[in-house]
Length: 288
Image 1 (tube, helix red, strand yellow):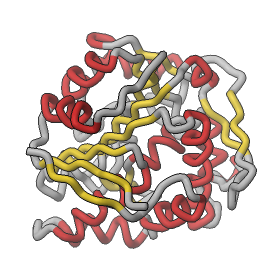
Image 2 (cartoon, one colour):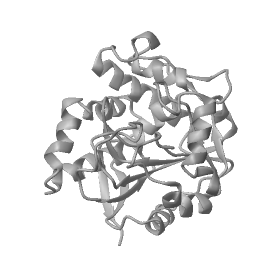
Image 3 (tube, rainbow, N blue to C red):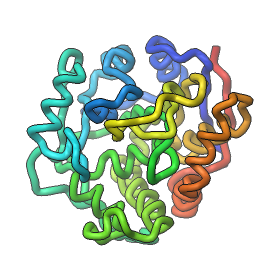
Image 4 (cartoon, rainbow, N blue to C red):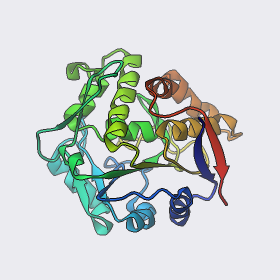
């Protein structure tokens, strides 16, 4: 059955909120709102003022987890400092979910590459999930969207290394590449299963560099801003974003797609669809 993905070319904070209201799915209880806090030095991440309207409306808690690579977000102390410097605390209550151990472990009985997912332990405090994703390229995954946020994004520092290493954190940068992509799909499936349908995904196609917001030194965007998408299906929304890039006539398209294709980025979507927690088939519904 095709998923519904709503799309608007209007890339504004007000439109993000309108899209959420159009989807009509209420997130209840204590809502975790996953953002990307942005590596120090990165110029492309979506700032807290862009997300202010939607976060205020939903009334949840902004959540993040530490990274697994050198930088200004790989320890709790440094990450909290970066979060503060980037202005997240000016608007929101922020929960660094893996600030203190031990990690929460989600089982993945049907995982193709990994059977466990290590996430920030504070995930247990939340009843529903709003994933706010900045759609862009990624140095290893090819692209980053909802599936990356669900997997690498919600993974603890150890969990990120575990996913990257396809179950062996010591091989964080050397594991078989497709096995890493499949591990992302496995991890994402466990988070979707944990929230049992109480989740909404928003992808914003703005500031689209080939590099992720995790890069302190990132290329400037190579594509013009394209739009805002929302769905309750994380696979469909990422597929829709990829399809929009392929369909566009932007002169930066070839450069962006080289990053996606050279990393076999669509394989994460393929692996996720094979696990059955969403669909690559979707109906794109345009919202003015």
